[in-house]
Length: 330
Image (cartoon, rainbow, N blue to C red):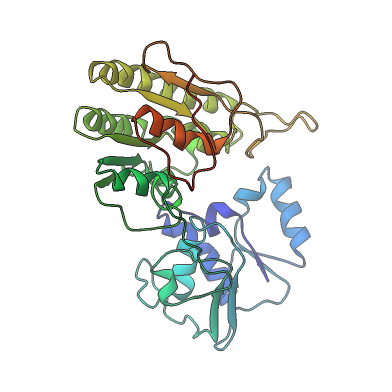
């Protein structure tokens, strides 16, 4: 078999030179390292100070690659990090690097749909169930205009994921995707593309959108590196961006709801091991209201399902019956 960290095999930022390392190992059995076992490959990486994410492509045992009529079964249930490697392995229209010699698969199967295009050459174990009246769909039905904004590392989160697995924008939905910086790891540039995101956000605020959804990638992506100083710099970069945004938003008469769907950089050291903590956390996340209606605040508690109803309440729109959460406004 082969073993490769997600930094290479599951890249989602068009770093095709990384994906190719995983591809060459899987398809041809070619890699810079060969080990007798997966355990040996992992231990070698740990001895070099590499965490699981950054383990380079390695071949295990006498693996020499795949053959025509082999089957490909992708077990990932999350789409964004599976798309590029699957495209390289099986997309007949793939052209981001040379795939001469790629085998003809007997079947290409995935646990879930990964995109509309992937479904043209893959089968799916669990077909997509339509999700009706997501936030974006409902806002569109009300005749409102919306803007989705994130750098490439987080672009699927504010588009495909937020729209319930739908690729196509809704009527009245516009999108912008500044490219994430081309660095090896984001601790090397903790500000990432936050300035470009902020420039676009300010333009959108000064435009005529009714709803703007923006994701700042820094605290999560830099938190994953395990570098505490870089994580602090990442948070400071977002603070500086908000310092630019909030006065513009107030001048425009807008309101901001600021929150997250998971933690990361608030825990940078593993309490049990004393080593860097690079994973998401299950800590409670903050939610803050800026420039809201007079004498209106937010209830304590709440859950992720309450965010969309709260936004709709701020827009003076009713929530659809499919939304099981409630507004946090008090």
